[in-house]
Length: 150
Image 1 (cartoon, rainbow, N blue to C red):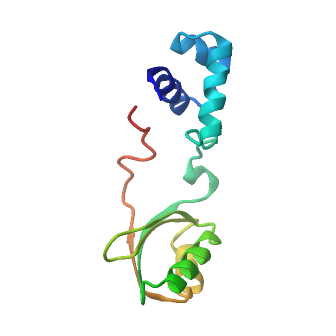
Image 2: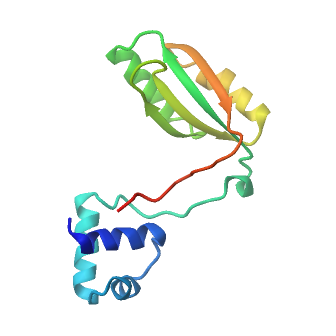
């Protein structure tokens, strides 16, 4: 990856809807080589995809929380069972396995506190192998979806 690729990535991070023509103009390259580079970045997996950013509160997701999960045992069966279960819970919009204690960090969104409580009681706490769930409310997003430094 050279500086031109990094310029392409920086521009697409800022606006993934740029046309190849506009992108080429912004980085000072002709359209054909720019298009080839974008395709190569997509095919190599550096560019994973394109999507719209949504405002959660405007689509009815007014409540967000971070849930820390500690498993009873950190063995292959428990880990894969837990990970398979949270993949199927749409309200879990981000999940990370951690070193140490706790084992996982989940970012969960829901309509309101009542909806989160129902999710917590009926889905999260019902996952086999979960020893403890600790949740904390998100007071304010200070840095969210920051662009990668290139």
